[in-house]
Length: 157
Image (cartoon, rainbow, N blue to C red):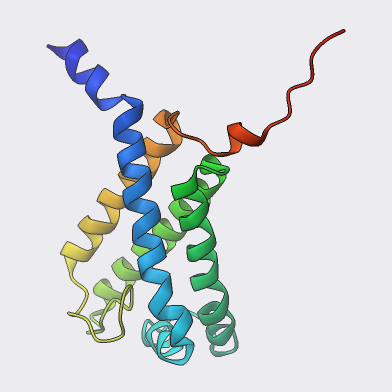
């Protein structure tokens, strides 16, 4: 029974499904932020954790980073690198939400749209689940990596 569960949990197809989900999630999250950077900057500023001069920079760079990593993760191009970056972003987002919750600031997440339900501990749990999925991808993903189709293999003489 335990070995069956272990095999199911560590199966590359589960990691592939998580890879598509997390990659698609970050692609979806980035599109609105890229189209409306000023609104996203307002969401970042509402957390009151970033210096004022860095808000605009973050509002422009983070969505493009999310999009780039999401696309490469879905395509299977350098998935470990993309997973590390997205996992780092998830850690940063989760810490920002926890700090904001502990300070009692009633704001929306700003994850997908600017008008969202206020952040709550459910937001933290959701982010931790996504972080667990990225860890699973990092350790167990071996299926359908596009980069392997284009690698040049040198034969020994």
